[in-house]
Image (cartoon, rainbow, N blue to C red):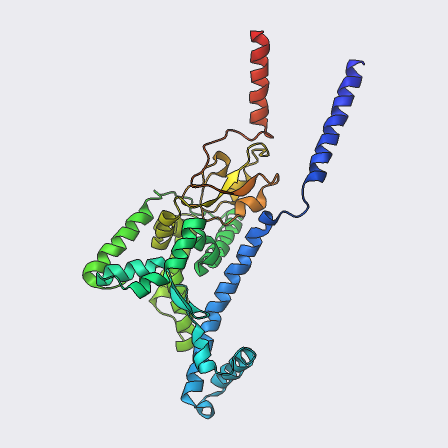
Length: 357
């Protein structure tokens, strides 16, 4: 067989191999769609935070037996909530207590749960351990030990707004507007966590509630709906959005948030984490670009800051990122085997062997 025929044959076999690999891939890869599911979960939680104050108002109106005394707007709320709840309960005054509160602390279908940061703040401010409150944080703590900082990516209502703010920053950057790109020491938020606890001891105040976005959002939504206005927390939250746009992208979550610090500590040795399969990686760097927390999946560097948001998985063109059960990240595996760097390294090794022979 001549050289040209051999080259043509090898090229055809290579193309067939590529087509076979494409056809052997599953058409629907569930993990690639988890980021969409995450957005749905975040949207549902945010919607619930808006719904809960209306349900509380409806309970109040019912308990007061004062429907005829309500003005037109309040009657509209009463009638709307009555239509929404009537298929699920015959006694809304009592039954609606099964769904109450915010992401800071609340009751979901009769199960009381609290943010672990709320428990830490209470212990620091009272210097006592109230075990019924501590037990309400058991489920979030257990889930964090398994899934890591997942609360920040999947549950936190502020995340929905912060990610929309991040997209706004990306559009502004493309339009030529200068966006903050400063980097700070990731350990800064652990100092904020420690300082908040220390300040709470002499003051007796739960300081975290004033600077923790999930608590602020839940509280401010309630103020706006039930009381007709916003508090000082709304101003603070707007400042965090400005900080993210003008100083450091996703800067508050990465460098300041005390809840993020606590969840990162809980998830340092989490069981479920994302892993890169180097044999399928083509070094496209899309995963690094997608990570809003500035992590480095290309070098297998996820660490305790990873919130398992799956944004990197969603953009990976070769399905190289997947979940694995392990208590630590793998060591850097080197460049992806489908990328140019790896192929160049292989070629250099072959050339070195040929010379040695």
